[in-house]
Image (cartoon, rainbow, N blue to C red; front, top):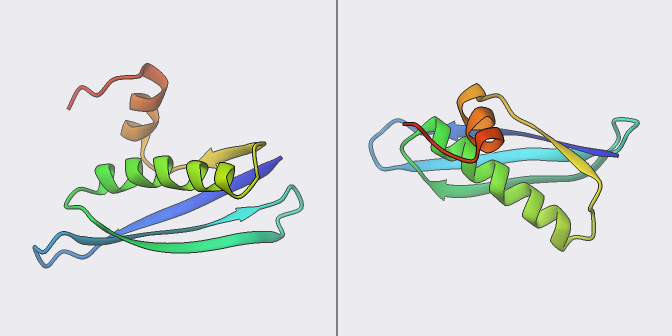
Length: 87
């Protein structure tokens, strides 16, 4: 089992620049892949959601299919579990 951990960074100067970054690690905690991707976003929750979409899709493209995703946003987690957004 692999674990994806990621973080988001919003640059608050009004231009919408943000970044996704994180790592894919094996069950021993050893680094397999790390990444950093620039994105356009003005909301931390939207950036978190983009990260939850980006990294698993990239992992599948890279040949990894057995992984869990770790995220910080309870709102995004609930949206994924419920399959809808209330806000």
